[in-house]
Length: 115
Length: 110
Image (cartoon, rainbow over all chains, first blue to last red; front, side, top):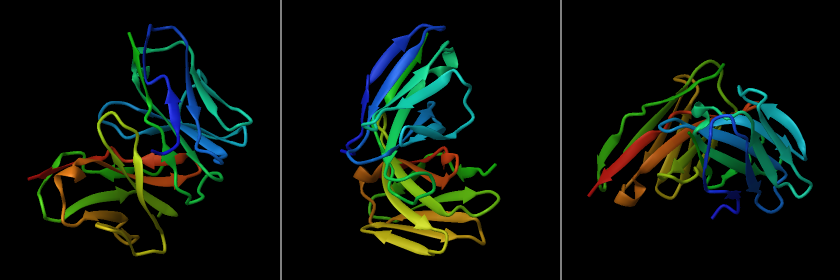
C-alpha cells in the first residue's frame, strides 16, 4: 500500500465527453503528478502540482488540466475526449518538488476507456 | 530531449539465476535514475534510486549500477523467484517529471 488512492478505478466515456479523475495523496506529501500509460508503454508525464501550483508540464494539450487542493488532493480533467485518450491514468505523490530524489509513490490508477 | 531505452521484449530466466535488465539513456547523465516494478493492471512500485555519483546500490536481492561512460544502468535480481515476474521500468527524474522507458517484462520460470 502506497497511501495514494485514486477514483474511479474504471470508467467508460464517449468521444467528446469530459472526465474528472481524483487522487488522494499520501499524508504529508505536497507534490502530486499525473501520468498517462497506454497499453505496452511506459507512463508519460502529464503535469505536476506543488503546493497548489502547476510547476511542470509534459507534452499534453490544454484540454488536459488539473487542480491541487489545500489538503494536497488532486484532480485531472480531460475535455473533448478522443479515442486515443484511452489509457491508465496514474497519480503519484512525493514530498518536495521536482528533481528532489525523494521516493515517488504511485496509486493503482484509473482505467479510462473512450468509445 | 532525453530518452530512456529499455529492451521491451520479454526476458525469460530460470528460477534461482540472476536476472539482468538494461536501461540506456541518451544525451546528458540524469541526476537520478529510478527503477520501478509494475504488475499487470497495477501502478508502478518504487524499488531503487541511484544517483549520478553512485556506481552501485543494493537492496536485499536487488542491485543497480550506473555507468555514465556507457550511459547505462543495469538492474540485477539475484536468486530470482517466480514472484519476481513483472514489468520493470527505468525512469529518470527531471524538470519535466519522470521520463520512463517502455519497461522490460521479466518472466521467472520455475
